[in-house]
Length: 250
Image (tube, rainbow, N blue to C red; front, side, top):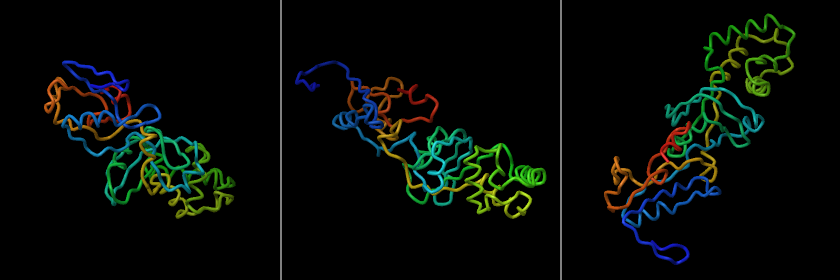
């Protein structure tokens, strides 16, 4: 191996643990893939994973910085492609947080029309939420509609959903009819956002894809193509969910 300084090193074994190309500002690089390809290894397509989702911005931009607990479902061409639940955060360009990161691999590695469905009351069924809001309207008839979801959801999120349901924010709760309540409940339980992609490799925490694992022994991580060469970590075609799995593998 020839170093940048021009020196040459010889050894009986070579371990390539160069990481992936995610987070270039923090040292992400493609050099590990290049080295292994030079030695005869195959590399799959590389894509960002554990990264922010890009969505339509009208809704999320007004909620920038707001956190919420939700169940997330990713629809690809109308079919469920992936699902997660937990904390998310709205940003200027889309949705971030652990629950969103879990879906990023499916977004960045697939083609077609993508839609993100958000359930902001995952522990309350639709019927139960309808009964709760109906009772609230009866108990607080003079309260403005923009406060319909106060105490159930974060204040700004609740107001945005009321607006998205096309309710008059200043109208008294006593004036709301069953159809209006159904629209609000429908958005709380299934708020749809068009997904345009992910933020990219620079912001990604991990690289999906990499050098083919079939070309390495599972017990020693030695190459089957170039004996004496070993590879581990993100440079191989292995990536995990949030929760320390990528650190464990590295």
